[in-house]
Image (cartoon, rainbow, N blue to C red; front, top):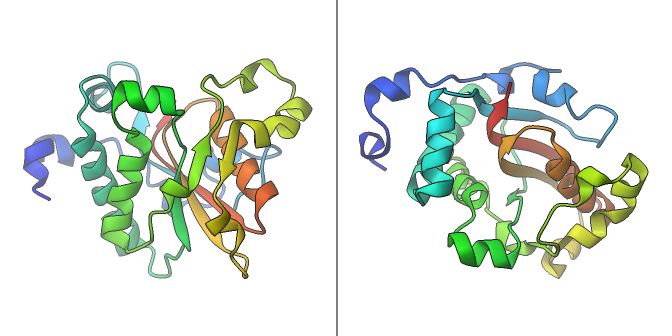
Length: 207
């Protein structure tokens, strides 16, 4: 994939990378403490108002530049492979969009990012095996107990994942982590539905 086609070399050199994947108990990991049991969590870029990451996300989500999302996934996956010698996950699962939003947008930016990571790491992209059942995330209006009880209603997973005989470790992928409520729900759905471990990655982390 020709990087300059999506992002000039100067912009690539100045991306606000977090390097969270090299830090245990990093900021994004701590944001999930006490909410969901995760193994690791990291984000590629910092997201700030007026910054380059915001412009990239706007281009992806509102200008339909899904190839940019895949390019960022390729770039991050390459960085992960280079800097984490024992990098291994049984599969990658992007936070799914509801079918109505998918039809409107035409693609899932998180899944395009997951596709890029899969391409550069060789980790299978299993995003098609997860489904979002509720169009609007109502989790933010619920207590933590209610959110936990409601996760099976928001997301569901395909029988192919449930048929796994060992305890797999999945990398769950989203675009931007802000409050983390959606990822919390998705992670709990996987943990509650399957005998699995989960880690989290995103294009960006809002600061």
